[in-house]
Image (cartoon, rainbow, N blue to C red; front, side, top):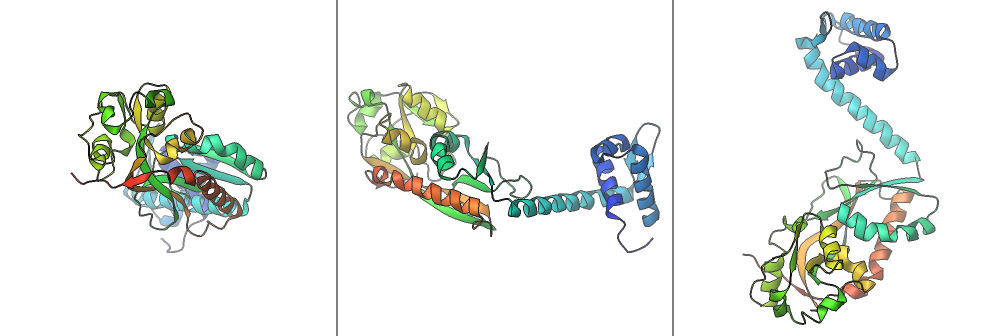
Length: 312
């Protein structure tokens, strides 16, 4: 046994075999013959001075030494892969991969992307509509737009506009429900995507902030904010719309918010990227474009008087 590290090619062969528990599948992944892969693993075992696999008729199993090596080998190659991808992205000034939740993608990003494409034809935009936690290195993501409180340790985090909720409906419905109290007779749509907020920013919280009897949701419930807003656009009822998700429909007149008061959620959308990458040309361009787009509807947002959530 020697303390020096074995050849990287041998370790790579072992990692693939340990993940697949098959020499044949590992060889296919690495585009080598099974004989070549077996030779690499054999040389690794000679370097260690002990077997890493138990070889059976139609299968292999890791030995104790093999299991000890497999975990760190997998982690090491994942780290190397992430580093290599990061180096490639650092040299790529033409591709931008953005992830955002489905509602923000559908209601905020998608209607505006033509303007960004016209302004920056040199940048190829790629999108992933997802709410899962992202690893910027592993997932090949440049920018994430996320809603919540944070914090975002280790990341560049830029809070975007203040986020609030207010009742929204189609214009024809506004005459039927001229006052907040009249909403007791309306179909109230529920957006469950804000259920994590504490204190809540729901119908009960909005009615408390308005000083009226608590409103009880009696309409359809949706797990995604854009689906709740689509139901309001279809005239099904009144939705408690989030600023980012309804602001364009308010600006274009498809929805109205007749009561002039909005409930502050205390949470914000944040523009996130790996620390140190915020100055990369395409990331900086996208950030500046987002801020300009938010500013275009700032006057609409200023029409609302903010009311604060009341803890239950």
